[in-house]
Picture (tube, rainbow, N blue to C red):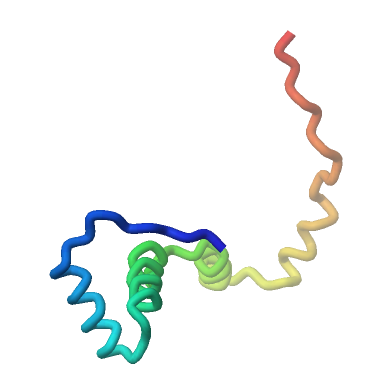
Length: 84
């Protein structure tokens, strides 16, 4: 698992992290992991699969509609491009 080192963190920020961690009942390291996770993977992020499924439901598509399209799909791999 990757590890991250944070340099030049002010004493005040480190103290605040320790206090926040104690308030949440976890270690300072666990608190920092939670802060980073929340910052880069917010609950409100767009989830493509969910968005496509919701759109399909709004359009009234069913599994039978998708199954009907499957036989018409070309399953042969595409020919690679030639740059000659």
